[in-house]
Length: 486
Figure 1 (tube, rainbow, N blue to C red):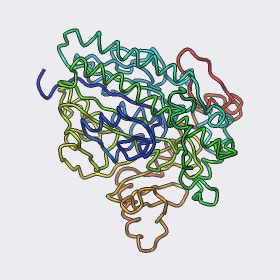
Figure 2 (figure 1 turned 135 degrees about the vertical axis):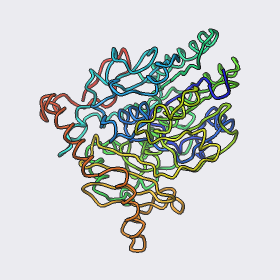
Figure 3 (figure 1 turned 90 degrees about the horizontal axis):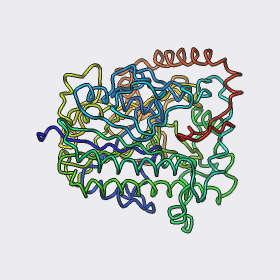
Figure 4 (figure 1 turned 60 degrees about the vertical axis):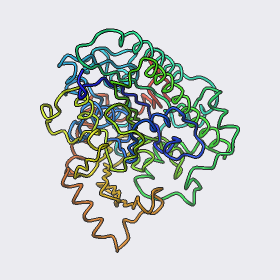
């Protein structure tokens, strides 16, 4: 195996707020293995998902393109294998590409490009979250009560599923790496923690429950920013309606932080196998999450907004191709995973490029600075209008088709406390950001295409009333567990 052709272990969590790691400066959360991985490699401090919700985010991660390019718009419109992924590209060239855990594609039995899928989680019944198709007057979510109600110590179907995923990953590494391989292999291990339910194993939950935890930023009702997009989301995903006291918030934060540490425990077990087998000599280890979580900030829980805690993702890369102990502030995206994975496996990305906007993270870690803006977009659950986020230097611009935009100066205001869109001194910045967005896509036309597709799917599933009568799933059941509609 040449220096330019290496194995890869790609580890993904679900809904991990990028600020909730020791290595990113969190003052409380216990993440020794994430921190160690960052120390032995490169941490990308400004990494973004292509969409702040599971299904389109994971489709974009697989295909290396933005959501408007691939047309998998929301959590009822999942990847079906019809478009070539990096999994397909490598498998077709003789590489073994194995998935263990959550994929959130449409269904088992489809060819998603993997050599093997172990215990995959796909969307329920190939239909997923049909309520997200209702974009006009979105109904209040019946499953929203689960966020507060299930927060506490214990085991859930998700923690049990993650234990199985971790076990299988260790077994695969120990068994398969003993075999000879003509070409580099890729192992994709995908956990569900720290996605709600916020039920954390007690040894992790009480690590936080027995401590004083500050309330989320801008949590007080008089502090919460008012914007119609945020109001739409709050009205639909009415999670905070069920947080009736500071004690409820404390339980939820303890559960979330506990699940982050629970995931960190599993990461440590996998990295122990990597070290025991000496795999880091010829393998790159990459960790990220599909998107983040509001975690109570601004009175919001869950995902679907464009703040750094949600559109931002953790991204740690270690191995022979990544500098040790480096922090890269250059904005990067999950669309960069496609060229990174195929090139480190020894396959020319140039031979595969077909409208792919990504750049190799290896090159960026080693100093490359591509001239581009980073995009994230949202067309799904709880939104009445499309949302587009771009990074232009120090500024983050959020564009809504039907609402006023938002503008944040992340250099001066990394917590996004002050929306500068109405500042007359920044009119030229706002105009320039919109031009950058329009150089990537037509916001109105993309919104129209998403809505047309969603209207067709809604009709195919019986229309608005039938979908509402089906109920709110809350979260996709783990393999072997029944759905719980509310």
